[in-house]
Length: 304
Figure 1 (cartoon, rainbow, N blue to C red):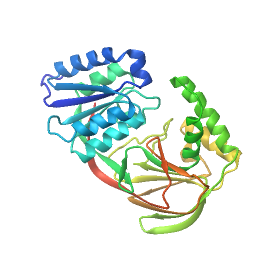
Figure 2: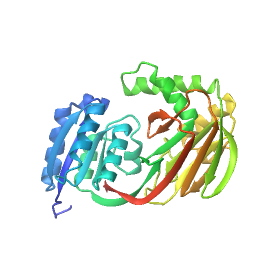
Figure 3: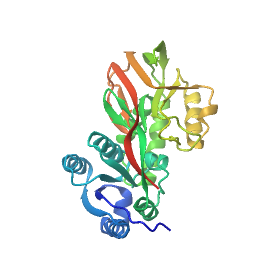
Figure 4: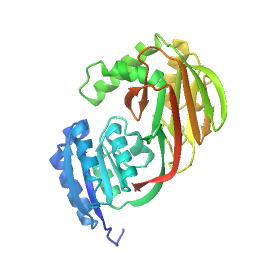
């Protein structure tokens, strides 16, 4: 049992739109945070809000020196925004999982149960982790082109209110996406070596994914980007790839090329109208030129 108390000031930002926090009630989560971090010797200030309002609060308060640890409670979108804010303002990021997938929390080895996560973080330690950027915009999990953003766009057009219905909506969106699989014509440059490709799917991850389901980086200070490419896929091959993603067998998929790099440059020559990309689960318009870089050990994180 740890005898020495921690010190420091934590600002916790809790997304009230998170299904997890709605189920537990935000007041209950607040109480658990106050007890655990108070007992560990931390000062704690808690802010609550939904979506854009919470992120606005986060950015505003992070410009001050009033706290040194930024705790983000919510899904992967909230966590990604918090990572950017922490990185740009020299704060330590702490992640309290409250989403559907909680991919970065998994990568940090944080328990997915909220009470267990709070206990683990309250006695945690700081560690330097890698962070990546796409055209200067940070991400902690992955940047994707092709199949993934098309699926998310279709899913967002469906109605879902819970974790289960979101997963069902994702399944339906995947089926609709693979039934018509256009490709992007790109020039991809990996650390100075370039080639032209027709791709159905491309993902670049902040460190290499492990053989996990869902896939996430098992090491966050490995100093390399993971590059995952699939050429023109039939719906049958796309279905196999999707299945392999679900069961953690992507390294063995014959249609998936896996590389590592420090820097990835992408020039998009041909793309379907309205093409988008995904950065940490959020959709953005797909630029014609994209530079993805790894920033080794530039993000301070709190880990169990």
